[in-house]
Image 1 (tube, one colour):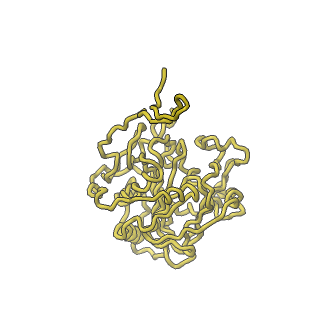
Image 2 (tube, rainbow, N blue to C red):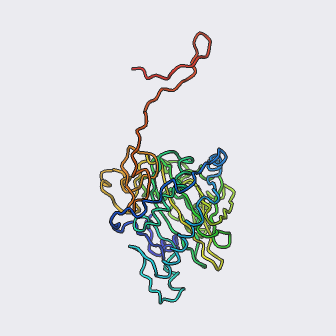
Image 3 (cartoon, rainbow, N blue to C red):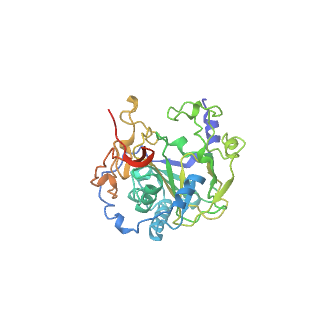
Length: 364
Protein backbone atom coordinates (compact mmCIF):
# COMPACT_ATOMS: atom_id res chain seq x y z
CA UNK A 1 0.00 0.00 0.00
CA UNK A 2 1.41 3.37 -0.99
CA UNK A 3 1.49 5.92 1.81
CA UNK A 4 1.48 9.70 1.73
CA UNK A 5 4.11 11.73 3.57
CA UNK A 6 1.39 12.76 6.00
CA UNK A 7 0.42 9.18 6.86
CA UNK A 8 4.09 8.19 7.20
CA UNK A 9 4.57 10.96 9.75
CA UNK A 10 1.64 9.57 11.68
CA UNK A 11 3.02 6.04 11.54
CA UNK A 12 6.51 6.97 12.77
CA UNK A 13 6.28 10.20 14.72
CA UNK A 14 9.70 9.59 16.27
CA UNK A 15 11.47 9.83 12.89
CA UNK A 16 11.40 13.61 12.80
CA UNK A 17 14.66 13.65 14.74
CA UNK A 18 16.06 10.29 13.70
CA UNK A 19 19.70 10.32 12.62
CA UNK A 20 21.07 7.48 10.50
CA UNK A 21 24.74 7.48 9.63
CA UNK A 22 24.75 4.05 8.02
CA UNK A 23 25.21 5.47 4.54
CA UNK A 24 28.02 7.85 5.52
CA UNK A 25 31.42 6.99 4.08
CA UNK A 26 33.31 5.54 7.08
CA UNK A 27 36.55 7.19 8.21
CA UNK A 28 39.92 5.61 7.43
CA UNK A 29 40.58 2.37 9.30
CA UNK A 30 42.55 2.67 12.52
CA UNK A 31 43.62 0.50 15.46
CA UNK A 32 42.17 3.00 17.95
CA UNK A 33 40.28 0.30 19.86
CA UNK A 34 42.95 -2.41 19.66
CA UNK A 35 43.57 -2.51 23.42
CA UNK A 36 39.97 -3.37 24.32
CA UNK A 37 40.54 -7.10 24.33
CA UNK A 38 38.48 -9.88 25.94
CA UNK A 39 40.97 -10.34 28.75
CA UNK A 40 40.09 -6.87 30.10
CA UNK A 41 36.74 -8.29 31.25
CA UNK A 42 35.60 -11.20 33.37
CA UNK A 43 33.97 -13.80 31.12
CA UNK A 44 30.20 -14.25 31.39
CA UNK A 45 28.66 -17.57 32.36
CA UNK A 46 24.90 -17.93 31.85
CA UNK A 47 22.66 -20.62 33.29
CA UNK A 48 20.21 -22.97 31.65
CA UNK A 49 17.48 -20.89 33.32
CA UNK A 50 18.71 -17.80 31.43
CA UNK A 51 18.50 -19.71 28.16
CA UNK A 52 15.06 -21.09 28.98
CA UNK A 53 13.76 -17.64 29.88
CA UNK A 54 14.79 -16.22 26.52
CA UNK A 55 13.05 -19.10 24.77
CA UNK A 56 9.88 -19.09 26.89
CA UNK A 57 9.39 -15.35 27.46
CA UNK A 58 11.19 -13.95 24.43
CA UNK A 59 13.55 -11.81 26.49
CA UNK A 60 15.99 -12.06 29.37
CA UNK A 61 17.65 -9.30 31.40
CA UNK A 62 21.24 -9.84 32.50
CA UNK A 63 21.89 -7.47 35.37
CA UNK A 64 25.08 -5.40 35.71
CA UNK A 65 26.56 -6.95 32.57
CA UNK A 66 28.40 -3.82 31.43
CA UNK A 67 30.92 -2.36 33.94
CA UNK A 68 30.12 1.03 35.43
CA UNK A 69 33.15 2.74 33.89
CA UNK A 70 32.10 1.68 30.38
CA UNK A 71 28.53 2.89 30.91
CA UNK A 72 29.82 6.17 32.31
CA UNK A 73 32.04 6.69 29.27
CA UNK A 74 29.07 6.31 26.93
CA UNK A 75 26.92 8.59 29.08
CA UNK A 76 29.58 11.33 29.11
CA UNK A 77 29.98 10.93 25.35
CA UNK A 78 26.24 11.48 24.88
CA UNK A 79 26.45 14.59 27.07
CA UNK A 80 29.25 15.96 24.92
CA UNK A 81 27.37 15.23 21.70
CA UNK A 82 24.36 17.23 22.88
CA UNK A 83 26.63 20.03 24.11
CA UNK A 84 28.30 20.26 20.71
CA UNK A 85 31.67 19.31 22.18
CA UNK A 86 31.94 16.02 20.26
CA UNK A 87 30.70 14.96 16.86
CA UNK A 88 31.20 12.49 14.02
CA UNK A 89 30.28 12.19 10.35
CA UNK A 90 26.52 12.28 9.97
CA UNK A 91 25.79 13.86 13.36
CA UNK A 92 23.88 17.16 13.24
CA UNK A 93 25.97 20.24 13.70
CA UNK A 94 25.47 21.60 17.20
CA UNK A 95 26.34 25.17 18.11
CA UNK A 96 27.13 25.21 21.86
CA UNK A 97 25.51 28.65 22.05
CA UNK A 98 22.12 27.17 21.10
CA UNK A 99 19.53 27.03 23.89
CA UNK A 100 19.63 23.63 25.60
CA UNK A 101 16.08 22.79 24.52
CA UNK A 102 17.02 23.31 20.87
CA UNK A 103 20.17 21.19 21.21
CA UNK A 104 18.51 18.21 22.88
CA UNK A 105 15.61 18.29 20.40
CA UNK A 106 18.07 17.44 17.63
CA UNK A 107 18.85 14.09 19.21
CA UNK A 108 16.35 11.31 19.80
CA UNK A 109 18.29 8.36 18.43
CA UNK A 110 21.36 7.78 16.28
CA UNK A 111 21.52 4.71 14.05
CA UNK A 112 24.72 2.94 13.04
CA UNK A 113 27.27 5.31 14.54
CA UNK A 114 29.58 2.28 14.94
CA UNK A 115 30.58 2.96 11.33
CA UNK A 116 31.87 6.43 12.16
CA UNK A 117 32.71 6.53 15.89
CA UNK A 118 35.07 4.22 17.84
CA UNK A 119 33.07 4.18 21.08
CA UNK A 120 29.93 2.96 19.35
CA UNK A 121 31.93 0.22 17.64
CA UNK A 122 33.37 -0.85 21.01
CA UNK A 123 29.90 -1.09 22.52
CA UNK A 124 28.53 -3.06 19.58
CA UNK A 125 31.44 -5.53 19.95
CA UNK A 126 31.64 -5.44 23.75
CA UNK A 127 33.15 -8.77 24.90
CA UNK A 128 30.55 -9.30 27.64
CA UNK A 129 27.67 -8.80 25.18
CA UNK A 130 29.29 -11.20 22.73
CA UNK A 131 29.85 -13.72 25.56
CA UNK A 132 26.10 -13.76 26.19
CA UNK A 133 25.17 -13.94 22.52
CA UNK A 134 27.42 -16.97 22.01
CA UNK A 135 25.51 -18.81 24.73
CA UNK A 136 22.02 -17.66 23.75
CA UNK A 137 22.19 -17.60 19.94
CA UNK A 138 25.09 -19.83 18.92
CA UNK A 139 28.85 -19.53 18.44
CA UNK A 140 28.86 -17.50 15.20
CA UNK A 141 27.82 -13.88 15.81
CA UNK A 142 27.42 -11.21 13.13
CA UNK A 143 27.03 -7.63 14.39
CA UNK A 144 24.51 -5.82 12.20
CA UNK A 145 23.35 -2.53 13.65
CA UNK A 146 23.88 -0.09 16.51
CA UNK A 147 21.45 2.43 17.98
CA UNK A 148 22.02 5.12 20.60
CA UNK A 149 18.85 6.39 22.28
CA UNK A 150 18.92 9.82 23.91
CA UNK A 151 15.14 9.93 24.66
CA UNK A 152 14.92 13.33 26.27
CA UNK A 153 12.04 14.32 28.59
CA UNK A 154 8.90 14.67 26.52
CA UNK A 155 10.20 12.59 23.62
CA UNK A 156 7.70 10.02 22.30
CA UNK A 157 7.95 6.27 22.62
CA UNK A 158 7.64 3.66 19.90
CA UNK A 159 4.56 1.53 19.34
CA UNK A 160 4.30 -2.24 18.93
CA UNK A 161 6.79 -3.66 16.46
CA UNK A 162 9.00 -6.66 15.71
CA UNK A 163 12.67 -5.91 15.09
CA UNK A 164 12.86 -8.56 12.35
CA UNK A 165 10.35 -6.42 10.44
CA UNK A 166 13.12 -3.88 9.93
CA UNK A 167 16.21 -6.14 9.87
CA UNK A 168 15.61 -9.37 7.92
CA UNK A 169 17.90 -12.39 8.29
CA UNK A 170 17.39 -15.73 6.54
CA UNK A 171 16.88 -17.91 8.45
CA UNK A 172 15.55 -15.53 11.05
CA UNK A 173 18.15 -15.52 13.84
CA UNK A 174 17.94 -11.84 14.81
CA UNK A 175 18.54 -10.99 18.46
CA UNK A 176 18.85 -7.60 20.16
CA UNK A 177 21.00 -6.48 23.08
CA UNK A 178 19.57 -3.35 24.75
CA UNK A 179 22.01 -1.69 27.18
CA UNK A 180 20.64 0.67 29.83
CA UNK A 181 23.02 3.65 29.94
CA UNK A 182 20.80 5.44 32.46
CA UNK A 183 18.11 3.92 34.64
CA UNK A 184 15.06 2.93 32.58
CA UNK A 185 11.76 3.18 34.45
CA UNK A 186 8.09 3.08 33.56
CA UNK A 187 8.00 6.86 33.94
CA UNK A 188 10.88 7.63 31.59
CA UNK A 189 10.06 5.05 28.92
CA UNK A 190 11.43 1.57 29.64
CA UNK A 191 10.76 -1.37 27.32
CA UNK A 192 7.49 -3.31 27.50
CA UNK A 193 7.22 -6.86 26.13
CA UNK A 194 4.32 -9.11 25.19
CA UNK A 195 5.51 -12.32 26.83
CA UNK A 196 5.47 -15.28 24.47
CA UNK A 197 4.82 -13.28 21.31
CA UNK A 198 8.23 -14.32 19.93
CA UNK A 199 6.42 -17.42 18.67
CA UNK A 200 4.32 -15.26 16.35
CA UNK A 201 5.31 -15.14 12.68
CA UNK A 202 6.65 -11.96 11.21
CA UNK A 203 3.89 -9.58 10.10
CA UNK A 204 5.41 -7.95 7.02
CA UNK A 205 4.59 -5.44 4.36
CA UNK A 206 3.54 -7.13 1.15
CA UNK A 207 6.30 -5.29 -0.71
CA UNK A 208 8.99 -6.79 1.53
CA UNK A 209 10.58 -9.61 -0.43
CA UNK A 210 12.53 -11.01 2.52
CA UNK A 211 9.91 -12.19 4.99
CA UNK A 212 10.32 -15.98 4.89
CA UNK A 213 6.95 -17.58 4.16
CA UNK A 214 4.96 -16.01 6.99
CA UNK A 215 3.06 -13.78 4.59
CA UNK A 216 1.45 -16.88 3.02
CA UNK A 217 -0.12 -17.95 6.33
CA UNK A 218 -3.82 -17.40 6.78
CA UNK A 219 -4.18 -14.58 9.30
CA UNK A 220 -1.03 -12.70 8.34
CA UNK A 221 -1.86 -9.21 7.07
CA UNK A 222 -0.12 -6.48 5.13
CA UNK A 223 1.40 -4.59 8.04
CA UNK A 224 2.06 -0.93 7.31
CA UNK A 225 1.57 0.63 10.78
CA UNK A 226 4.37 -0.99 12.80
CA UNK A 227 5.79 1.29 15.53
CA UNK A 228 2.76 3.61 15.62
CA UNK A 229 2.20 4.58 19.26
CA UNK A 230 -1.57 4.83 18.74
CA UNK A 231 -2.86 1.34 19.60
CA UNK A 232 -6.10 2.02 17.72
CA UNK A 233 -4.07 2.52 14.53
CA UNK A 234 -1.23 0.03 15.01
CA UNK A 235 -2.36 -3.23 13.36
CA UNK A 236 -0.12 -5.26 15.67
CA UNK A 237 -2.26 -4.34 18.69
CA UNK A 238 -4.66 -7.19 17.92
CA UNK A 239 -1.74 -9.62 17.86
CA UNK A 240 -0.16 -8.16 21.00
CA UNK A 241 -3.42 -8.52 22.92
CA UNK A 242 -3.11 -12.31 22.74
CA UNK A 243 -0.24 -12.13 25.25
CA UNK A 244 0.34 -10.65 28.71
CA UNK A 245 2.37 -7.44 28.75
CA UNK A 246 5.14 -6.74 31.25
CA UNK A 247 7.39 -3.76 31.82
CA UNK A 248 11.14 -4.39 31.90
CA UNK A 249 12.76 -1.62 33.94
CA UNK A 250 16.55 -1.69 33.99
CA UNK A 251 19.40 -0.19 35.97
CA UNK A 252 22.42 1.31 34.23
CA UNK A 253 24.66 -1.50 33.01
CA UNK A 254 21.83 -4.04 32.70
CA UNK A 255 21.39 -5.58 29.25
CA UNK A 256 18.10 -6.94 27.90
CA UNK A 257 18.40 -9.59 25.19
CA UNK A 258 15.32 -10.35 23.10
CA UNK A 259 14.21 -12.21 19.99
CA UNK A 260 13.61 -10.43 16.70
CA UNK A 261 9.95 -11.44 16.48
CA UNK A 262 8.81 -10.49 19.99
CA UNK A 263 6.27 -7.68 20.09
CA UNK A 264 7.51 -4.82 22.23
CA UNK A 265 7.09 -1.08 22.66
CA UNK A 266 8.02 1.88 24.86
CA UNK A 267 6.06 4.88 26.09
CA UNK A 268 6.94 8.56 26.05
CA UNK A 269 9.43 9.93 28.56
CA UNK A 270 7.13 11.56 31.14
CA UNK A 271 9.96 12.28 33.58
CA UNK A 272 12.41 15.16 33.90
CA UNK A 273 15.41 12.93 33.13
CA UNK A 274 16.62 11.45 29.82
CA UNK A 275 16.37 7.70 29.32
CA UNK A 276 19.55 6.72 27.57
CA UNK A 277 20.31 3.35 26.02
CA UNK A 278 22.54 1.65 23.48
CA UNK A 279 21.17 -1.22 21.41
CA UNK A 280 22.93 -3.66 19.12
CA UNK A 281 21.36 -6.11 16.70
CA UNK A 282 23.02 -9.40 15.84
CA UNK A 283 22.34 -12.66 14.05
CA UNK A 284 23.89 -16.04 13.40
CA UNK A 285 26.83 -15.25 11.11
CA UNK A 286 25.72 -18.08 8.83
CA UNK A 287 22.37 -16.41 8.12
CA UNK A 288 21.89 -14.71 4.75
CA UNK A 289 21.46 -10.98 5.49
CA UNK A 290 19.61 -9.07 2.73
CA UNK A 291 19.98 -5.74 4.52
CA UNK A 292 22.51 -2.91 4.58
CA UNK A 293 20.91 -0.27 6.78
CA UNK A 294 18.42 0.62 4.06
CA UNK A 295 21.09 1.21 1.43
CA UNK A 296 22.02 -0.75 -1.69
CA UNK A 297 25.10 -2.99 -1.73
CA UNK A 298 27.31 -4.69 -4.28
CA UNK A 299 25.52 -7.75 -5.63
CA UNK A 300 22.08 -6.68 -4.41
CA UNK A 301 20.56 -6.85 -7.89
CA UNK A 302 22.00 -10.36 -8.35
CA UNK A 303 20.43 -11.60 -5.12
CA UNK A 304 23.66 -11.73 -3.11
CA UNK A 305 23.67 -10.91 0.61
CA UNK A 306 25.02 -7.83 2.36
CA UNK A 307 26.93 -9.86 4.96
CA UNK A 308 30.21 -8.30 3.80
CA UNK A 309 29.07 -5.00 5.34
CA UNK A 310 28.58 -6.46 8.83
CA UNK A 311 31.24 -7.35 11.39
CA UNK A 312 32.00 -10.90 12.52
CA UNK A 313 31.96 -10.65 16.31
CA UNK A 314 32.55 -14.26 17.30
CA UNK A 315 33.06 -17.63 15.65
CA UNK A 316 33.28 -18.03 11.90
CA UNK A 317 31.14 -18.10 8.77
CA UNK A 318 31.09 -19.51 5.26
CA UNK A 319 29.69 -16.12 4.18
CA UNK A 320 31.67 -12.88 3.78
CA UNK A 321 31.94 -10.39 6.63
CA UNK A 322 33.44 -6.99 7.47
CA UNK A 323 36.28 -6.07 9.77
CA UNK A 324 35.89 -3.28 12.34
CA UNK A 325 36.82 0.23 11.20
CA UNK A 326 38.43 1.15 14.53
CA UNK A 327 40.22 -2.13 15.23
CA UNK A 328 37.99 -3.40 18.05
CA UNK A 329 39.22 -6.95 18.80
CA UNK A 330 36.75 -9.56 17.53
CA UNK A 331 36.68 -12.75 15.48
CA UNK A 332 36.96 -10.81 12.21
CA UNK A 333 40.53 -9.87 13.20
CA UNK A 334 41.52 -13.27 14.63
CA UNK A 335 42.90 -16.40 13.08
CA UNK A 336 39.94 -18.76 13.13
CA UNK A 337 40.42 -22.49 13.56
CA UNK A 338 38.53 -24.67 11.10
CA UNK A 339 35.74 -26.78 12.50
CA UNK A 340 35.49 -30.47 11.68
CA UNK A 341 32.41 -31.04 9.54
CA UNK A 342 30.49 -34.30 9.43
CA UNK A 343 31.84 -35.80 12.64
CA UNK A 344 30.36 -39.21 13.35
CA UNK A 345 27.82 -39.35 16.16
CA UNK A 346 27.19 -42.38 18.35
CA UNK A 347 23.57 -43.49 18.07
CA UNK A 348 21.63 -46.30 19.76
CA UNK A 349 20.79 -49.20 17.43
CA UNK A 350 19.00 -52.50 17.88
CA UNK A 351 20.95 -55.65 17.11
CA UNK A 352 19.61 -59.06 18.03
CA UNK A 353 16.99 -57.52 20.28
CA UNK A 354 19.62 -55.56 22.22
CA UNK A 355 20.28 -51.79 22.16
CA UNK A 356 23.90 -51.10 21.26
CA UNK A 357 25.80 -47.94 20.39
CA UNK A 358 26.90 -47.49 16.82
CA UNK A 359 28.23 -44.70 14.65
CA UNK A 360 26.07 -42.79 12.22
CA UNK A 361 27.50 -43.42 8.77
CA UNK A 362 26.69 -42.08 5.35
CA UNK A 363 26.01 -44.93 2.91
CA UNK A 364 26.41 -44.42 -0.84
